[in-house]
Amino acid sequence: MGETDLAAAFEAERGRLRGVAYRMLGSAAEAEDAVQEAWLRVERSDMGAVENIGGWLTIVVARICLDMLRARDTRAEEPLDEERSEARAGGIDPAEELALARSVGLALLVVLEELSPPERVAFVLHDLFDRPFAEIGPIIGKSEEATRQLASRARRRVRGAEAPPAPDIAAQCELVEAFLAASRDGELEKIVAILDPDVVFRADSAAMRGKRAQEVRGAERVSKMYKGRAQGAGLALLDGRPGIVVTAQPGQVMLLIRLTFADGRIAAIDVTGDPEKIRATEIGVA
Image 1: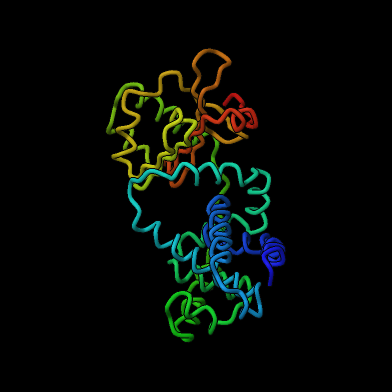
Image 2: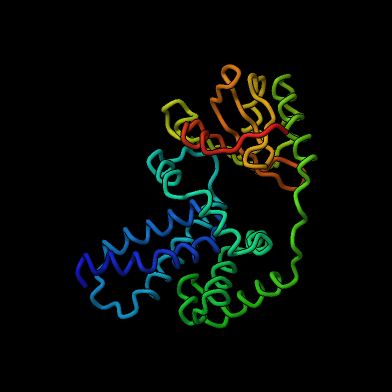
């Protein structure tokens, strides 16, 4: 297969592969990363003996996703590669991410987050994409029977799960106000109490004023970053969800801070200073 034909075959599979990766990772940006990594591996591989390119690519993407899921459990505070973070920002359209989430279902994504990486891979590949256990086993390093048991256990958990309740916007707004007040007053213990113990802070290179994008994990570390800060920051609705805007002067937004909530706490803080992203966001009064 020539390079042009190979590229065309990969593009024909891209949408399906992104769907596979998204169901495993629960993140459109990470799914795009996984698909791009798959293409890099395709370029380095001898495809002459591959008869079913779609099946082969599914296996490649599944292996990449499994590595990414396992890395989540071992990754602590670390900087993000700037080029990678920019590729994420440019590669996923918000409308496309919303369409992906709706196609999977929020309830299913929530349950999948609770599965171990091998359970998640086994369930997604077999139950959602009809891949045989004999093919999935080598990906996760298990026998065919063990893989079947993993998928069965995951299936029971998925079937027994209930849809999560609708978010309480008012309660989330109160939480954001409390976070901003504690930050301004430098009350470290209060900040820690508002943050999920495993909270993740992410800031793109634009927010870092041209420096490398940053990722920090853990309530203790993140709270120290916000102690005595939040001057010029205020509660706002970002595309209808509670978040934070940072302004240099009235009407001039410098940063947008999107928040993810879980169990009455802030579980993720995503900061962007990208002017295009700021302009594309609907900012409302909470």
